[in-house]
Length: 344
Image (cartoon, rainbow, N blue to C red; front, side, top):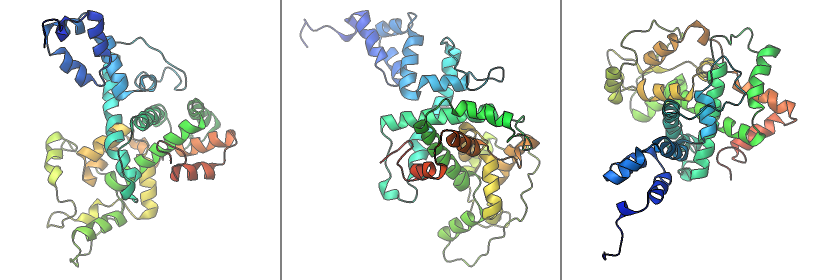
């Protein structure tokens, strides 16, 4: 380096601010602000909110949809656009839901999307991740607005309730609805495989792990939710279950008890569980490997949750029919990757 070459920290403040604004993650911003006193002073000179918001939008965006999710409350209809001023508390909420969306985009969706034809499995490109996060935020908003104790089984298909739900989906074009349906299918598969697997799924996994055994699994015939305990979903218990031999029969554990019923009853269990938001499902997948833990969590949500299936699919069909779209062709296009987050 010659004497005429300026040091990085001697560059103009405007240039260094532009370096901050080109960071692609909050971690990059914080790391850059820790490199020297000059960069730290620029970060703390009143520009930190703008800098962090720019990085968070790249990492967790689209911001607009994340803001609609975190600012929703029952005082305002879900379909109305909200444009609050940016603040640190708002940014913190966006980062919280954004971390969940990143987990779905990076870890879960690629595995579930290509579960059968795994030879085609790949990571999502940047534009696909953006579409997935957007669809996830919109589905999450739908759950937050309509999967509540006020949406009872007896009134959920009333014209007034259906119109309220459809108003939100009418904000999105058919391509965006296909993306939401694609992500919904991934959420359904995650629930059916990892959170509440059927008796048949437990049987198949057991046979793969113990192909030589003649042990016959004993499945529960009833799905009554037990009373939740203080130990349910505790951090210590979750750590203990990380290496829990879920499919190994012992004197105190029957693997068949982890099943959630045969195909018919399991379908309705999954329909109930679809009311959980993506954050709750990710938490159960990560921290609640046993059926008893999931049951205890669901029991804690209240009596309205049981036998009260999700409404997204039927609301989506209603909106598509209003637009003159053939529902069967729409679903087939999503399944064949002709529409959705990943398209051929």
